[in-house]
Image (cartoon, rainbow, N blue to C red):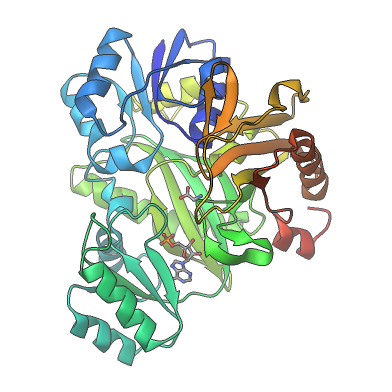
Length: 425
Ligand code: AMP
Ligand code: GLY
């Protein structure tokens, strides 16, 4: 098969590697890809929101199946657009993608189907905000309704801050929506649960925990993700059952009833509190960097799985996993998530010898005259498989030190909470 892969991050490099390893793959076209994918695929420089240009590339390279990595084209309807042109594509339709594209939509669904989630209020006027504050303890979580590239959520400790942040959203800080969703603050342990879904069935696709804050001990501003590990020990089979019965099944059934069945990866972002799962967010795709820790553990051919999912044949598809643990640490440009320099050369990567258990996934990189340069805040993801998180982390840090990129920084404490609980994890 010729496969088209939309996106350019570490997640897409990890997906690209799995597609490359499949016997079913003939050629891979990445739109637009990065320096890492260019070694496995043909990169074609096209804007991922320019659907007509994507269609041209699909026809030019006779692409049999398109896989969409990031949320923005999904939320803007790329799947519906390509399906209308009779192109086979893996990912949710525009309506189902509102699970991520509109927090108000997701919360309303939770209320309608009694899905456990934080108490909330959808606000379009300041007096809605003021009324909610009266009956809620601080902190209060203020969220922009629409996509906000990870910058739409603030945890507010005072009334003044809630009003200030809400007003910014009301006056159009985020182009995607002017609605505000206020939420009570949930205390617990965060974890992510992944599924692959076709029109009729769903299958487990791993668990992971992400580290969104930039500094050690989860301090400082939010980022796109500084590192992750898989599996997430907090999700045991007892909690998993509750996630499926109380959260996943009602959601998928609701979409089915509305004749907008879900198809694609589904990322269930959770807070686990007193052994009960609460839905914090849905993402309609794999996570980044969670994908970079989940896919290295996958034993079954990814193309076979996605091919079956895109034709509603998941039910009889066996998905097997390595009985190993996995971690990734993100090497970032100094200054991220604030201002940082771009186009800084990364010299040593080709010289580094990796074992079969280690992977360097590119995120914000590009090649210029065969030399590697940084183009983003999150530059490389160094992942490794093993039997113990402490040892895996040591190995990754050893690799990062060998890369010795002077413009980079990273968190040395990925997995600190689970490791503190049990050093044998
Ligand atoms: P979201 O985009 O909704 O996932 O929010 C981003 C991050 O904010 C989450 O990963 C949590 O760490 C935090 N967060 C969001 N909602 C809540 C909540 N109701 N209670 C506590 N933390 C939250
Ligand atoms: N790592 C969080 C996300 O992919 O949204």
